[in-house]
Each structure stands twice: as C-alpha cells, then as structure tokens.
Image (cartoon, rainbow, N blue to C red; front, side, top):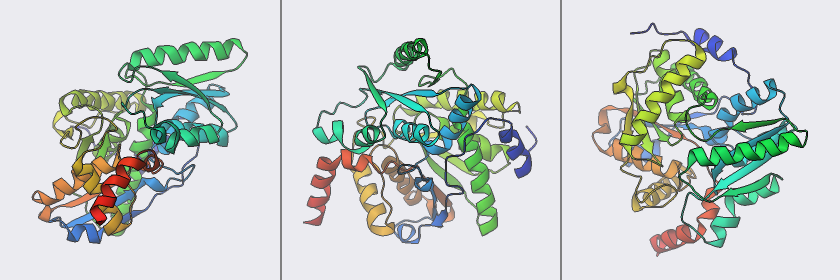
Length: 352
C-alpha cells in the first residue's frame, strides 16, 4: 500500500517532465441528465476532452504535450509518428508541430480493411494533408515493431539531410510520456469533482494504446480516488489488453519516480463492444452514437468514443442505479466524415 499524494504533490511530480503547452485546459466536466434518464444510473457525467482545442481537439492533445516537450528538450525540429489511416493522433501531431514551428512526418498503417474513397481521403486524412504533413505508408496494421523500425529508417534519412528528428513510438517498451497527459487529466478531474461536490463511482474510458486508460487509472489511484476505471477495448481483447495496461502503470511509476499505486485488481476491461474489430462498426456502437447525439448533442466517433459510450450505457443499465458514472469523451469528430456511407445508411433507416 502506497501513501496517497496530494494534488500539489502529484502536480509537482508532473512538473519535473518537459512539456509543451498545447491544450485548452481544464476541459469541462458536465452532467448528462437526458442520457441518465434513459438508463438506471444515479448520475451520468462527461469529461469533455473533445474540447482540448487545436485542430478539432481530442485526448491526444494532452499526450502530445509531453511528447513535444521531450522533442523540444532534445532540440528536435522534426517529429515522426505512426497511426492508422484515420488516426486522430497523427492529425494532432501535425497540428502540434505546426503550432510549435516544427515539421511532421506521418506514417499511415493499414489497420482497418476499408477501401472506400471517403475513408481513404476524407476525415483525418484530409486534415493531415491540409496541415501539410509529409505522408508515408506502412502495409501492415498489426506490426507495431515493424512500423517503428521503418519510421526510424525515415528518421535516419531526415537526420542525414541535416535535420533533428524525434520519433513518437508506436510499440510498447518505451517511456510512456503520453500517459503523463492523463495522469494530469486525473488530477484535473479530481479537482473539478471536488469543487462541484460530486462523487464519481466509475470512470469509463477507451483502452487502445493504453496511455489514456493507464494514465487516468494511475493518477486517480495516486490521489487515493477509489473510483472504478473501466477500460473499453477498442483494438485488442480484454485478456491481451490487461497486461498492456499493467505494464504502462509500472512504466509511469518509473518515469515519475514514485511507487506504483495500481493493483492488479484495479485493471478493469471490457471487450463487449469490440467486435468485429478496430475501426469497424457494430450495432451497439451505432446505437450509442445516435443516442449521444439525440439526447445530449454529443458527437462521437465510430472508432473510440462511440464504442466507449456503448460500454457506458451498458454499465449504466446493468445495475447502475446506485452509481455515478463518468464518460471520458476523447474526441475523434473528423472520423465521422470518413465513415459517412455507413452512418448515412444507419441513420437514414432510423429516420424512416
């Protein structure tokens, strides 16, 4: 058992890490009374990390503050990053680079079996091009180590040209600087809840790379906040993801040079909304996207936040009458346009 940190102590730990300020913070913490009325939950809240600003915002802005802080500390002038074709992360890396006067190279991996023109050219891809990033491609969407090796080859080419590259890695095994953005978000959320006089029993959040999920879980436990943190799997099954989150938490502790406050039982995951896989829609996700839009005016994406909302609604309807639940809205709005044919079909039918 570790001693709980105060808000100021955790803030001091984070302040020792290089950071480039990019996000509009704090983001709002709001009630969702209309969705709450559709469920059995005592209360539903949303943490509006779709409102972090910078090129449509989203959770990745918080993570990039710490990656770009490292890049600046190392004197880099060019940042390289890998992501799926419709990655929010790479879009925001390009925007962050522009904001800080740096160049950006993006490697898009083939993670989702979609060839429709809207998926290949609209949404985040359109924004990548608008932001002026240099685009590369990698043919395998399930080869994180290979993608990292290839982008380091590109970085070596850039270095030989006289530039100073910094690579944001894709695979595990690297210092989780991005997770620090969500340790900070945990601190911010705990302060807001205290100021609002509300108690959060459960936080529901996307679990993909693990930075957002692990960072939130670590930060809340470091502060002694006992809320359950439920990770909704968006890329891997729960059994595979569990080890990734546990490892991330240990790495955060090493990075911040404090004890790891996360126990094995704290890592809670559900893959009920995952099938048929990353970036692919299912009925529960479509229903969740529609309910959030119609009842709260919240726009959710098909890849991350829509699946998390499906998980939240399931948790709220499954004995949630004695619990207050917090939905972490991670953004991803541009991806709605990349999935236009499927969404148009689904919601045109619903309106008939």
